[in-house]
Length: 341
Picture 1: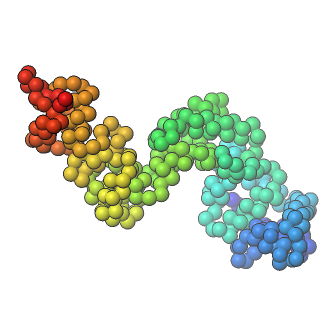
Picture 2: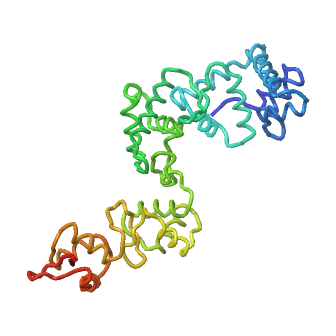
Picture 3: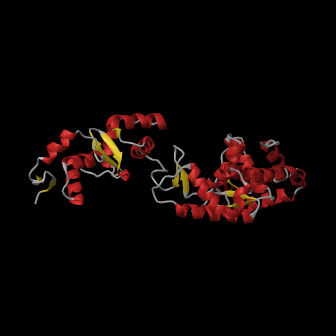
């Protein structure tokens, strides 16, 4: 991906500095042999100076490198990095995405990041509640992408999940003029700039603060498993699906207990759970019967069975046995059933 060796380049650049300035930059950016990064406070303490003084030395070091002949000698590599930002991100890319593309080695990533900070053909926007740290080459493109990301986030319902195809379509519609100039991979990388939009382990997108995206426990894993299945599942099946889909060790008993306590699920049969968002009514069969008859009025045996079977996975006989409770229901002269007075 890159034609130069970051560690060799940073070593050459740092050699133009006095010992203390070089040591400060090595510690701040993790350029030493241990790869550890240090805070301004920690460095200041080791030298017996204030954090502000350390910051001044850091800025002095960076500016000295940029003014040096060595920097000019290596300027082609900064142009190469600029072209990478354009190539991978179409002019703007999240910092973590860029570093992931360039190296998986934490130590090498530190050196690449340092070169990004020192380089001047590109610019950094710091993270905020809306966006991650990001690097850009054209301010106009950066503004367009960020504005589009905000609009896409506003279009998402709180706990809704949308497919990757749908989120990309919404994004394209917001980007308007520049969408056709960039491929799908670039658009996906742009989505990763947003801190408000996220993707769950199954590849669905939604608001990043939703439990359906930021999956934290068995309940969230169970919700995604049942939603992916598309129809009611036995709690044993749910536990198995969690293991298979997410590689998470879900105990059967624990899974059952979590399903019982979470309002996103409805018990619709013996150990069978559906999602409440599918329109299933909570409660035992008698409660379902009462709600149906109160809503629809007197119904025949066949009509009642048909409606209850849409809410519960139970046998016809079980429904009829529950209808015999004269404290709750009564049979009218025409053979239909209604709620008891």
